Image (cartoon, rainbow, N blue to C red; front, top):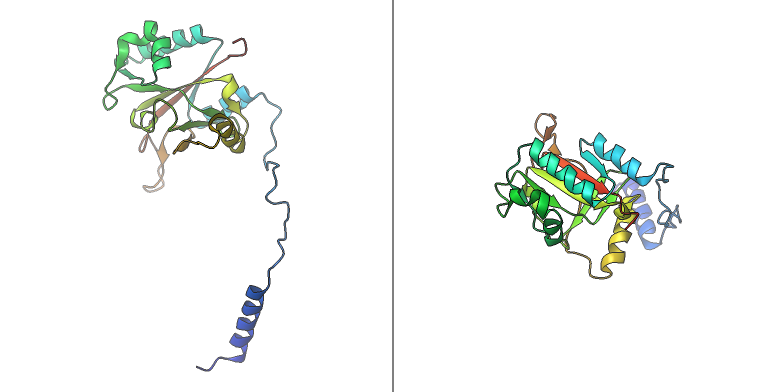
Length: 213
């Protein structure tokens, strides 16, 4: 097959390039420094702003007693009759205030309650994993997801969240790590935003101040 001089010239350049390594133009591009610089706001404030901008519902509690009271008021005001919670510590902590609404029927519950691994302030993200008692499905199947988190679980960026997980689990990371940023949403159909298609239509985050614990 005859090859034109111009094409042969291009092929020669490709062969030459492949035969010798090309120096990386940005040697520090894989450094440890983050592209995003931490803001001067407290992490609690930044997470609350980002989370609510994503249509999440944020509630700050000074202690566990206030948390239990706020949860009870929320359930009563929304006329919820079935709350699913598979995490033993959470069930026990709120048994006196929420016990009458507990159900083992995830499919037909009004809302689910879970803990989380950590919260990412910069993006308003809740990080969860298969390592939690609630497992893979609880935060996704219920129409409303209620997440209970503590101030010590706040990190600035996604990278910090992964380091937080590594410190907790070491080399035995959970088989699934989920980054949930606001209620489920899609705009696949005629670019119309629809909330609650592939997951909960409402997400609450109750952040508890544990600085005195």
